[in-house]
Image 1 (cartoon, rainbow, N blue to C red):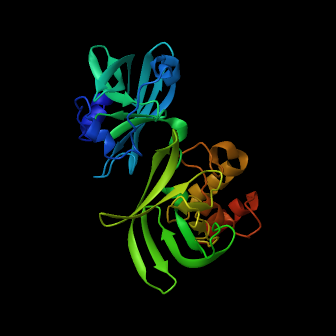
Image 2: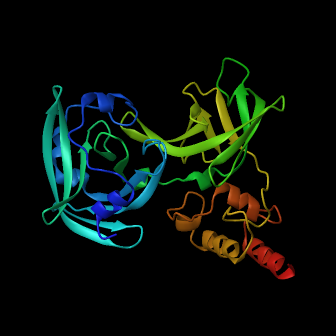
Image 3: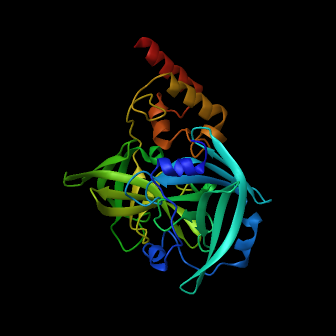
Length: 323
């Protein structure tokens, strides 16, 4: 794939005409139409590293985003796009405005020479995302706003529900459990033993101009419920905005030694443990690398139950040698 157009074509995403107001009004958590503020006319405000994301499902990109590469926008109005396969394109960034239904929309276009690689629409109410067209099938999102994936949630969770009028942290009862797998499928079991299955998508929603990680649980095509997650509480996800229902991570080993939660135990698990210990900012819990250790991976890799140490890496290696 030579450039961003090739990437978009490969995923079946076509450039769209100027968006209609109704297209954005369909889901205000994704894109909010607002008057463009003065700050959005400044290239410096857009400068930085963005992820190019697309949806490879029938869901909108904010429900099931997949990474297609990285776009760096510079203060001088130039950009460079690097796809996930290592190819790249570069050129200039052009800004413009459209007035639709009395609203001002800012357009952002990336050009390689005379070829328009990407055309998106930016709103000051959603400052970390540039959506492409009106079908919400692809976008640019600031890199720091797209830092989690389904593997961060793989493992066993206990459902807790408030049994008073206070928040669930004050007083709760356990009402079920949920197993989330690394492939995105889940099995939920209530306290009466009834089960339901489906797929959980890790996406986001924008609240008050801030991108929040959102987990959407689907049973077939039906959205069962939506949870929110923040890195400040890595072992909890909350449902609704009342603080009355949550999942908390169950410290249960899914597969002893499986640090990277790929369903097997091999030398890559030993390597990940050592990376997490020697470079925690990159490979530790909430590390910057896409391959960082997850909370469930830490539980799996803690062989002796005394916290993750070099001894656990040695123990996993010994497990492999004994096999």
